[in-house]
Image (cartoon, rainbow, N blue to C red; front, side, top):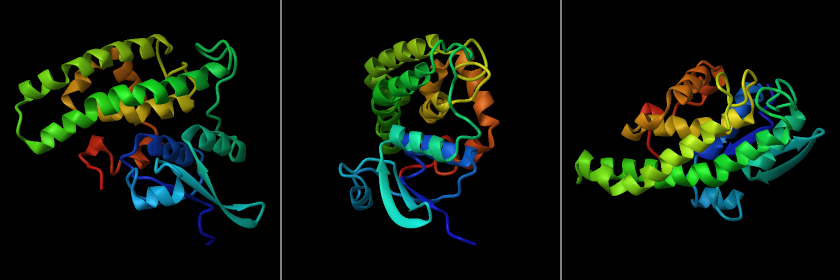
Length: 228
């Protein structure tokens, strides 16, 4: 059996890495995964600024290239081109989208604003404080309260952009779902997950039924994992 044509560089704990592995699994593209954290030697070997993920494309048209493709949205566009089905794109008029670019707008908002608010603002400080074990839950909540207030506003604004039910844009699964899910899966794993609304919890139930989600759960915060 020929080895997979792709290698993903990034720990399963990385939310952007998981967005990409969700799609690779969903589209049935076999891949190897090199687990490393951001700004490690391995990360810098594959990304000029040490970020995750990097997709190594080993072959193009039967020719060995070992091309390193960085940045999640660029990787997503490549995956869509080489494996257009099952589609993760939204067409104009599908669900809540009037134009297809609204899906990429949502993805960009999640990456630019959601990550810093959810992960850097709340999840990572909460986990670090819990693991250190020096503060009570009440003290931790007080410490991260300003970030939680910001998180509450962000969740409300993201939900306003979503369809009333189903996936982010309605009945059609898309990249919007695969970029939002890793963030909210982390959030749901900590006490501040109680900020998730009934709509967002229903959406997460839909997502958790996907084989791609189940295949990428190991090594994430939702099952108690920590960064390697």
